Image (cartoon, rainbow, N blue to C red; front, side):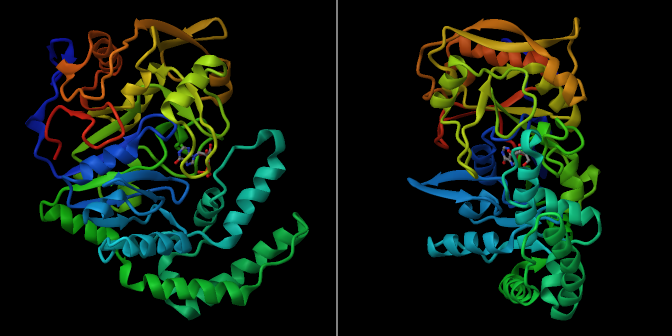
Length: 443
Ligand code: IMP
């Protein structure tokens, strides 16, 4: 499938048309998945979130108006069926607030569905998220404070509350009563906090349940039926590969599976139903939160990238750590998710540099590594080995084909393809939907 034509790997449109595509972040999140997902949603019939929760966030601009979404896939803005799968941890207040806001702006939310098996973020999850971060002190993870880790912990400890529980007052009372007594013991004994009142929580969450009831369903059935009917289904990953609980920079990770395999578990579809996997790669790297980041630039270059790329968190507003593109990490991401195409975003941010650096290997404890070390302590000792490529000064936001790009920008993209041996499908050269180079029809 890999052939060389004018430097770029042929993007084989023979794989199209296809029915399902998983979109994953290939770095530490914030790769610009929002724009690519929005772009692909246009061609999809259904958009499915499969992991994470309201820790994710993207801003989509439609006709000059900005919409910030944390849980509902941006496909809702183009009237697509949107699914929040079983692998997502759902904050019902956040979900209802997003639905209301969209409805008030004239969007149809009747086809937003949430899995009956998805776990629910409870008030104590958010509280523990903050208390535990405080307690970690120097070793803090830099979480978003949205209760994500504690909610997944309860899920795996088998004491979680699921969306279906909110629809049955008796079951919900029984489960919450039992679990809250343990939660309150921890709050009182370890954190010297007041216990949380049961009745108030019961009432609030049963009300959320009633309001969500028309949207709650077995979403695995819904998604699989859509695939059976030949519908085009986009699985939209949140966060990024290097934040994956299994494969990321543990413990500086989120508590879910942003990698492509997560789509199967988190949406309830089998691996043979996934046809394509696209990785979203920012033209440089950012990270929010703590943890190792070999190509981080803490000085002038980092500040330049942050200012040029407007690198501040959508969910928390935190300034993002910035650095050069890491091809070792990208090869690792391509392997983990078997990426078969790439979307490179924010290429325009690099315009104006004399020299652009890409990391091709690491020096670690006197050895040269070309594969990602799985141990975060080793990764923290890695020093990047850079290749320097010429920069470009031309405004590239008007480019609509690879041929429209200046030679240095093309060379940069070719270097990415060459390193990971995965063809480029999309290159984003500006925030607007139109500022996009598309190499083939993707569905
Ligand atoms: P948590 O997901 O809130 O538990 O945070 C764990 C780590 O993942 C922290 O480093 C967060 O900054 C990071 N993180 C969580 N969600 C996102 C995201 O959507 N983009 C980038 N980083 C994220």
